[in-house]
Image 1 (spheres, rainbow, N blue to C red):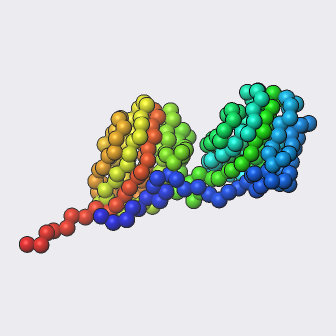
Image 2: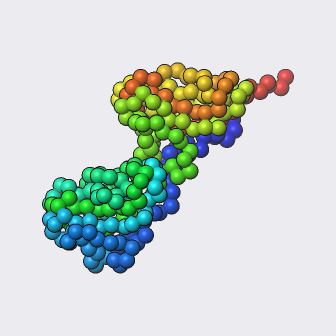
Image 3: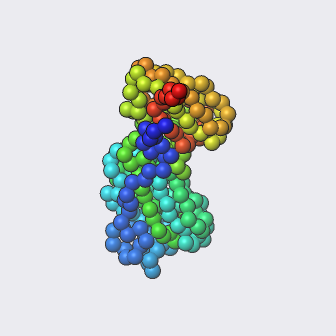
Amino acid sequence: EGSNLVLNHDYADLGSELVTNGSFDTDSNWTFAGTNGAVSNGVGVFADTTNSFIIQSSVVPASVKQYKLQYEVIESNGGVSFGLSGGSSAFGSVSLTNSVGVHTKFITSNGSKTNLQFHNGGNFIGKIDNISLKQVDPNDRWALDSGWSIEDGKLKATSTALEATQTNVFTTGNTYEVTFTIDSIASGSVKVKAGTTSGSIRSSAGTYTQVFDVLFGSSLVFDMHASGSCVIDNVTVKEYAVQPKDI
């Protein structure tokens, strides 16, 4: 028993809103490049197939972080190249869904640029609205090696043999109960490590609990033991103690 020692254990933490005037109430806070990107009647407009941008400057800190982008396509009249791009874009070139509706995209910044730039790719005609951008895991609870990401409130591994780590979870010399859920695993296998102590190798979906005596190290680690992909959620670490019964 006891409190959960894992921070952001369900991967749902999001930072504050980074976009100002994401509902395009006015054209302030937004600039335009190309010929026919504009704000009109409370929406962002790509009026024709001219290569155009709708831009908000200095939105993203200049460091490599993951973000949740949400946007709404109000009108779509064709073209498949709607996305994020441009020389000052914090996200490089990212394809976005261009059908009418509210869409979510998880993206990683490049660490050197700071602008959020919507681009019609020279062929998309349509209107966008209700732009939101929030950092995922804003307090940096999890250190993610290449191939790991946090998306849709889940920890995801894609084609990797590397690790996702949270530091300062365990105290050496103590015993802990670790529980986590593998929502899905498409390939490979995964194991959890408590400090330097490795748990059982898991290769199928399910909820797993294991007790660890932590002899060295303080980090909680998910290790793709065999290169592959999986989705993990709801991680719990509690200090474990066996109490004698009264006689």
